[in-house]
Image 1 (cartoon, rainbow, N blue to C red):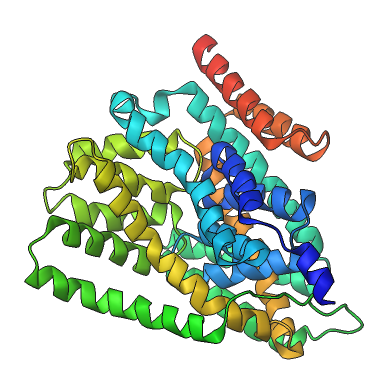
Image 2 (cartoon, rainbow, N blue to C red):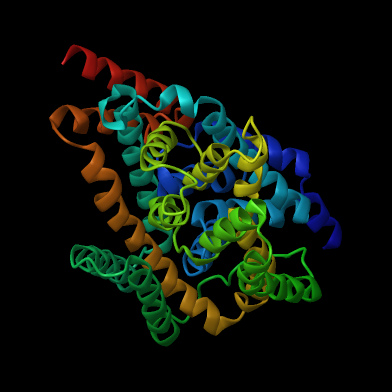
Length: 406
């Protein structure tokens, strides 16, 4: 048994190689990233099964931080320990961070909505998310009760958002209610138990991570008051954003704006220019922090500021991951927790379905031509199994051609 487990373990170098390829090709925001991750880690490489992957999404949808990045880091940890988690973060994050620091100044005058190839990237994101929702629905909501939970979750999410209520509260509430429904109604009847997952993190390490998380969250503002260093102030601001944002993605923008614009570190024009640049690169939107750190320019070349801001916004994610994974690995093996997770996983499908419509579809599918291009991208992914990076390239090029000749 131990030998079999060792065989399934990988190396940090292996994780880094796969994560870097994803970091270079994952366009479309956090939900699209989860689709790419599922294709790469679950379907192609089988580093984990569908249920474990869905459980990770459910777990990190209820915690602060960038959901897709946290799921990727967790997969890296399960595959190759803490070095694997660091490798997963570096591979997925550095390509877009480097691109934003290096090319943001060139892209400042480019409007995101006016660039045809950027519109093509939005369209391919719709196809990627649709494929992910379809695949996860077939495995996580295959029967009437769970399909109903998924659809009701999508409806509640859309109504909640239309009412302009806090999105994070609604998302967490839906997951909690779905878990309670699953706990009461979805106990296994001859269904296979959840696969056992070995989490290579000890309880002592997890406890230290929780302590450090709160020490930094509460202590950095105090240190900022007694120390006039700009580096301390920047680290405090970006750490607090990383600790308090739920869901990641575009949700982080208002929190970042409130930290860097009123202080005079970054002008509104610089902030918007960086946001436009962030739309045009793959990887997580949290790397926008690297751009902001470079603009703050703790050194003339901005690299120190970019590194400090990027590390600060991600430190909470690492501490939360290390703190929660050991308990997650143990709890998910209990029958009552498995029942709750069946309901939660069905709700996750509904949340992804709602995001497919609210975020991806409404911003990308603007006319019949866009729908046709999205349908073609979906066909290439779902039917012909064309590699996602190639579909991204083809769809982006088609989007640019459509805009040019329209």
